[in-house]
Length: 248
Image (cartoon, rainbow, N blue to C red; front, side):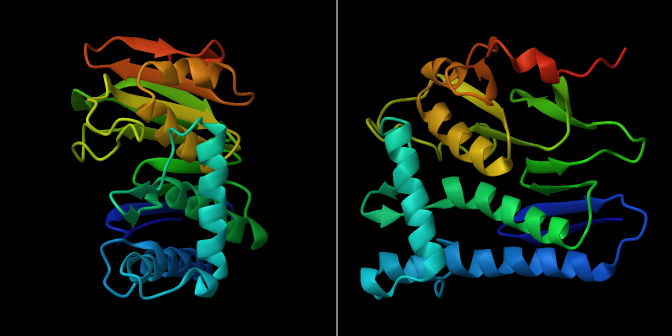
């Protein structure tokens, strides 16, 4: 069973291929995304993050989820030598870490209900578990950032997260926090990780690093990356090819 709903201003797809699937589990997963949207959206007037940015909620009154995300963001900032920062122009925008975290949490809700073979896709950032309907690894396409109708790589994945960061779809929305006037010299960076939280947060940070992002990923155990620069040239980590599907 497969459903798609628009939440968090993006299509969110849940597909479960286990033998018996109830409608209820989809409701639970989408309700969770709705909760996340209402709490973390910088576009919603009444979200907690908007109220914090307006100075209407003091630090001592942050909810547990806000406190956790701020803590995870600070950890990621340190881990990436400052290339990940949710604070910009006097405002907090934790979207670069919230999405992957939320996808993983929604997937855990589905897992706890007993399902083993499914994926959760929010805006093309995906958490994958188990096998597809043919009993094989799920196949995920990496798009050509210069031609969205073209797939440049097909990956074979199970029990992994995959995230792509880039400015080619939404314009310049990822910046180098060390120099926000710098034009980043790459157009997309795809990261495969042990889960979507790890893949998503490091895809954002490593994209901000530009071409140095691949070198950073090369030294991160369990993470692989595929970078496309402004000239259409690809660079990838030494272990990336283990995920490339043989579709001949």
